[in-house]
Image 1 (cartoon, rainbow, N blue to C red):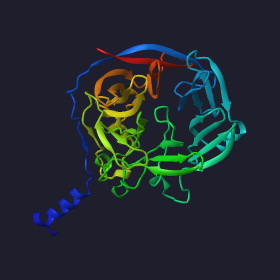
Image 2 (image 1 turned 90 degrees about the vertical axis):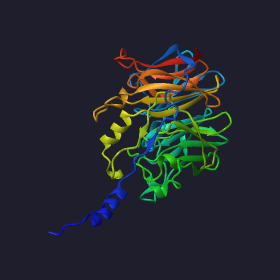
Image 3 (image 1 turned 45 degrees about the horizontal axis):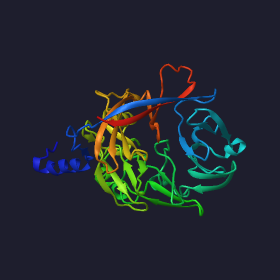
Length: 392
């Protein structure tokens, strides 16, 4: 058998090294250096009585202010209805049942109520935005080109939630989506995760790419958790974007693919690492989940227009995380920043199994977060705790 010399083997070692995926290491430059100047105060609780076919943790909600009431609405996917409650009194008002028309919507996954008669709803199965007028479908706006077999590599997919809603600004609706796997290097400047929809013309344009310094060079962020995109809109009309593996926030003008990054992290968050698995597209789902659960990651960003504050949510890593661990074991913390993104402090809220951070919103009363009490065995109530943050 022929033996290879070290000189002959060296190029082989280089080839193996070149094929290995790089591990991205995102350090927290302010860890342990920030001063906490605020305290979290529980201000109150609201409970909304549910009917027999509704349950806590609805997938999507919208708060609406009309002339007479401030309304809390939520989507009941089981019966394809939207429920309306008076936020202040918690009294049930009505529900919109889409009836036989809803059979044409395979999977309702979020909505935007625009006045008394108009409603826009995402059909997640067809990837259409469905336009209703007086409870009747009047238009479908496609959010992908069905002729493309690989359309998921070219168009965003949407996991809408209360903290990642459909928004309206300047006569357009904005939907923020994502890619559900790692981004190929040749797509980093091509794939756009935000859809801008002209309401009058029904036309869709796509903007905003993933920051290359986080997601470029084929880094393994597989599984759809690290590639989630969260956003809010600033008082000056900028998109404020929060990416799970980044301690920074990214500020973008509408219709732009350029960003300004600014620190928006936690005093306690550790270095965040990409997934250590060379064959990116074959990364086991269990490894993707373990990486996400075991690390400190960021999620929602909300703006409080009443107090001129930003709230960024962080989910702490589960120590010694194993494949069997659940995301519900991660502990929610709220990072508070002023209108210029200056760090004011942060507070630990509790485990995600009790605090459904995806259903969070701001009112004049404070920051509302859905709380799932272990005592409500029969799931009779949709419960929110309201927090305010005061200077120490």
